[in-house]
Length: 137
Length: 141
Image: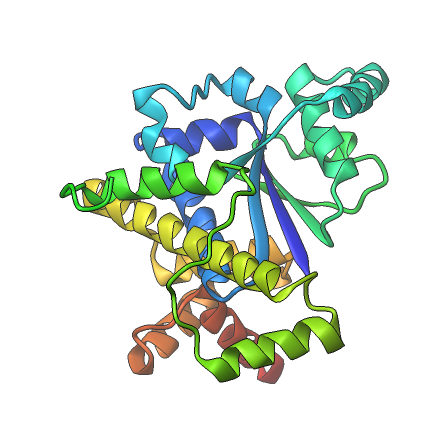
């Protein structure tokens, strides 16, 4: 079974700032993913690149070095996903980052998708009909 | 970078750089695999369709293992630098339940109790061990 875990803007902010009130919680979620990877479970942590832009996560920036090491992979906004995200944004009025997150969720071939977010309502609305496990951080 | 006395963080960064390189260049390595392991992998590929080839199967397994190693190494380095960021086992069990969509995520008291009981006899336990024990406790409550 493949599990996909998608980060939203505040999840990224919390992960990147050790002083953030939700930092410890985010580290805990990443730690569980690490444990499961060690057990050879197929689980991936991803960030839509538009979310990364919104969060200011510059992988070349020194302040983000420690987050770069936590195995969060980019979900790139390519042409196909851009079309999909545009449709989601038109239909729901969410931000560009939120629309990209929705496109990642809806297009994923994972058996189960989880979104780590500060806004469960938005995350659910961009998921369309796709079953998604939304965790409020 | 090997042999230059690199730090652990440098090593983590270098492993990530190498894993991110999508190049398909291959090499006949000098790594020696147990013969029976190679034969088992060959059967898994040929008879169970586990992967397109034994090379693909071995590469995928090695990549997954390396990813797990570097993430844990990065977390350990983070805990060293920020000891207050290390979650307790009970907190991790809540996180595990949340990731699974398990209703026990709403019962942190039970998960805390389960973590204490598991830790008493299995100090190396992880969050999934605690979650399993909590499910057992809940089933007999």
